[in-house]
Image (cartoon, rainbow, N blue to C red):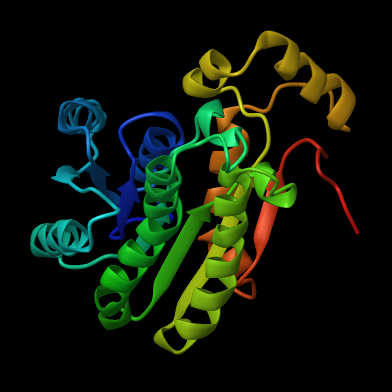
Length: 250
């Protein structure tokens, strides 16, 4: 198994992309840390992983709280000996945050950036020393196609994720850590399909995408598995759109 012996720390790991990442990495032999603010969901995810024979741990983690992140990382290190893979998946993403800055309250904008941007800073910096002592590793940030349009608070927060990916790729290179990001387009997660109006989904597929089908969670999982593999050993600091050709630009 290609990830046997590795430890993956996944924020927002109980559902959606996070759980799909956990299941895929667990199937390849990795131990999984589900870092969640929703501990009931985290324990349920861990139980499902353990039923599949995966070594897994649930830790409480509000990514916007640096002390909480440090505590969660410490628990993961104490349990499994270190961290090899960090997936910064936790994020706020409802259509609520696609409204103009002047429509949202300042508190809502601050909460969005605390999770989507500062959360990545907190987790990446906190995991650095553990990953360094393991000889390096991989950080995967989850951005969004909206970051290419960046005309809403959500889009700007995801544009910032692309910037953080470049910054940490440079800063962490000497520690043997590669940092890349995945920018999903319309992907058929339960939360996305429930949140987006049906006519918007149809328009994205038919009018924006070059590939006229809904993206599926395995499309994102496969990109993650590639980016953490030795096949991507010469790739760092990049953000890869997985969007069926939507938001293409030169």
